[in-house]
Amino acid sequence: MTPDTPAPVGHGARLTVDLAAIAENWRRLGAQGPGTPCAAVVKADAYGCGLAPVASALWRAGCRTFFVAHLTEGAAVRRALSEAAIYVLNGLPPGGADAFLRDNLRPVLGSHDELDAWAAASQGAHGAALHVDTGMNRLGFSVPEALALRADPRIRAAGIDLVMSHLVSAELPEDPVNTRQIRDFAAARAAFPEIPASLANSSGIFLGTAAHHDLLRPGYALFGGNPTPGRPNPMRPVVRLEAEIVQVRAVEAGAGAGYNHRWVAPGPRRLATLSLGYADGYPRAASGRGHALVGEVLCPILGLISMDLIILDVTEAPDARRGATAVLIGDALDVDTVGRAAGTIGYEILTGLGSRYVRTYIE
Ligand SMILES: *Cc1c(COP(=O)(O)O)cnc(C)c1O
Image (cartoon, rainbow, N blue to C red; front, side, top):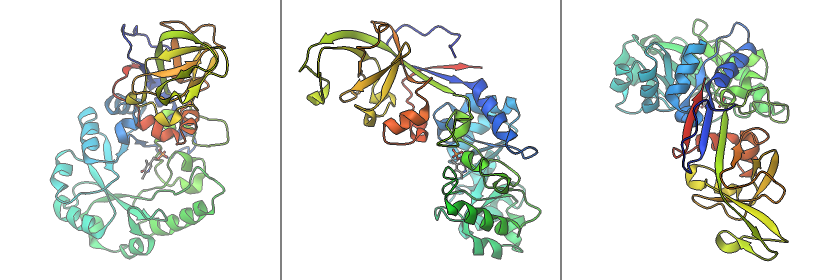
C-alpha cells in the first residue's frame, strides 16, 4: 500500500487511506448476509478517514444507504451524494425539522416528541427510522412503547421506512445480552411487518443471520477494524500512518529521555525522534507502551509522547536514520493493536486521527 503521489517535503506525518480497501470491506461485510443490502455508517468524519472521499467511494461500490450521527454530518454526505438515503442516528433536535427537510435527511426517531415533530413537519413525504431501544438504554422507544405504536397513525405520517435497534455487546458473541436483544428486536419489528428492519453493526453481522434482518449497518469494520476480536481479522487494512525520523542519537546508561525523564536508559541505546505527537491525534496514553515499525523492526515508544514528537528505541533497527520512515499504524500495528497499547479501542484511534497529517487517498 504505497501512495502514488510523492509525499511533500517537510515533517508532516503521512496518513494514507485506502479507498479500494474500504470498498472491498463493504463487499466482504455484505457477503456475510447474501441478499441483504449493506449500508455504511460514516459518522465522525467516516471514522476519521474523511467523509466526502469515503462516502463517494462507497457509493461507487454500490452502497446506497448511509448513517451519520449529526445533522451537519448528514448535510456533508448530501453535498457529496445527491441520491443517497441518509439517516441521522442522533435523531431530530428541537427545531431541526426544516434543516432535515432541506437536505432530504431522515432522522432516526427515538421519542414521542421527535415522532410528533417529524410527523407534523414532513407529512409522510420524507423517510425516517424508528429507533427501538432493546437494551442500551441510550436512545429509542422501549420495546413495549414500540409495540404500542403498531397502529399509531404517526408511523405513516412520519414516513417511517426503517425500524432499527443497536446491539450492546456484539463483539462479545458469548454475552447473553445478544440473544435477548435479537429476540426482543424480532418481536418489536414484527409489529411493523411492512417496514424494513436493521440491527447489525460490524460485529453484529458475525452473530449470524438472526441479527441481519433487511439492512446491515457496519461502521468500524469498513475501516479495517476487527469485528471478531480474538479471531483473525477478516477485513483489509485501510489506514496507514507514517512519520519521519528527525534525528537519531546514542545515549549512555542512566540518560533520561523526554519530559520528566519518564524513561531512563538501562544501558547504551540508540534513540530516534519522530515527527509526530499527540497534537496529531496519536494518543499520549500510548506513552511507554506503543510501538512503531522501522524497517521490519518493532521499536518501543520511550517515555512520554510530546505534542509534536515521539522518541523510539531503535537500538535493534539498523534502518533508523534521519529521513527514514517509521510506521505507527499499518502492517503488524493494526488499529486494534494501537488501541490496546493506548488502553482504548481502535474506534477511538480512528476517530482521533488528526487534521495535521498530510493525507493521501489511494483508489
Ligand atoms: C456507530 C453505530 C453503528 C456502527 O457500529 P460499528 O460497531 O462501528 O460497526 C451502527 N449503528 C449505530 C446505531 C451506531 O451508533
